Amino acid sequence: MTWFDTCYRKLFFDFHTHSTAEQVAARFDAERWAEALASVGAQAVSSFAKCGHGWKYYRKGRAGYLHPKLPSGLDMLEDTIAACHRRGIRVIAYYHTFNSEPVAQLHPGWVEEDASGQKRGHSICHHSRVAEEEWLPQAEEIARHYAIDGIFFDGTYAASVCYCPACRAACGLESPPAPKAPPGPAMSTGRRPTTAACGSASAKRCAGATPRR
Ligand SMILES: [Zn+2]
Image (cartoon, rainbow, N blue to C red; front, side, top):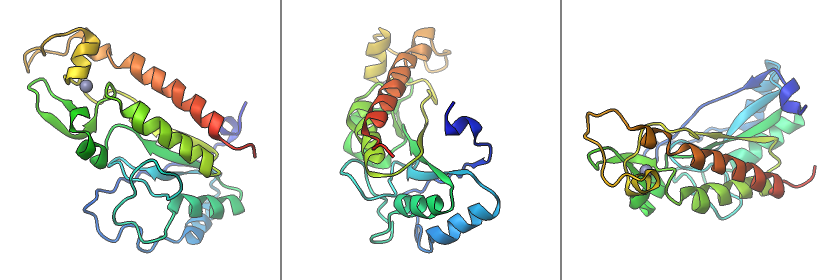
């Protein structure tokens, strides 16, 4: 049994901030935040390492992409951990996987496609090289540099069926079905082995990178 199994007052906060947002974390005060959490008896809280637009809110390590509007010098993850740990509150780093503005810009070929070949915003396909080149190195760095108590990977599921060349190749389909046809079973299940393998690889690399505390 781990601390997670016996910790019942965990709070989860969900925020995802597009690059065009203004005044991002402009008035963030980790001490006030942790004090508010302590006042309601929180035992653990999520803290954003990487959001659903692909931006990170911490500064250590080389992987990942800092939110362009984050105030100079601010490391939200580090400050949150310090303030929460002083009050006995555990911190779980939040890590979103498939949506990423910067990765979609850098690797347009990794973006998901619908059945008609249209790109889906900045939703990155799990069958691209995103896990090996982005997620795993970044998760490992977070575990190495920050005294987190856990890491939560969000978006480890197939949000929708992807018809990109990598998915078609992985599922053995040469051409996508007609747009109105329901997804074939091969396309629907094609991601599962990738997602499961990625989860297990993430756990292994994070555990290996976590300093003994
Ligand atoms: Zn795909």
